Image 1 (cartoon, rainbow, N blue to C red):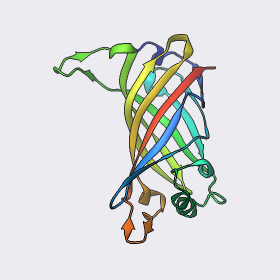
Image 2 (image 1 turned 120 degrees about the horizontal axis):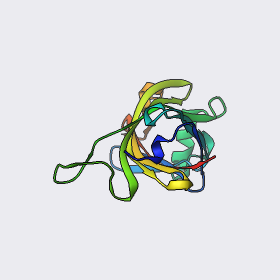
Image 3 (image 1 turned 120 degrees about the vertical axis):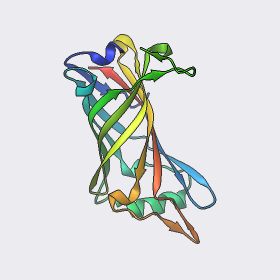
Image 4 (image 1 turned 180 degrees about the vertical axis):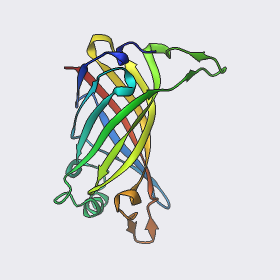
Amino acid sequence: MNRKLLLLNALFILDPHASAVQFHAVAALHAFEAKVPDLKGEASVDNGLASAHGRLTMQVRTIDTNVSLRNTEMLKLLEPDKYPEITFILKSAVALPNVTDDGRVIEDLPGGETKCALHGELVIHGHTAAVEGKGKCQDQGAKGWTVTGDAPVDMTAFGIAPPRLAFFTMDKMVTVNYMLVFRQR
């Protein structure tokens, strides 16, 4: 098990310059991605990895799909004047078995990585729903740790109907990709 992730009473703060969150969505004839540049967050580990908890906050107005018309339509749906933030609340993290291509279970992946699942709640548009992200947690020694992965999110769970533009409707499922770098406080 990755020793750094099992620190007791350790506090971490998100490094927004080294971190990234984006979502991937699919419409009838194309897919697109949107980046969320304004990130804030913190996490703590009280008694092992399963006790990890924290919060990640993203500013809705800063989400950028790289297409102004799509940005305008997205902001109409998300109503940033009423709901300015999207928040992920980490309830726990679970180490998953590290299985090699040949089926062997090993303690750590190369580079100090451990497969992990993040369990928490996502708050979007005034609605809260449980989400699970799966990826890798990486020990960075005294520098902190990095969590990378993705989480499927159903927009309808947050009271948001998939947007339509002309004859095209976006799929209700989006994938949130994340690379979160935490530094020890």
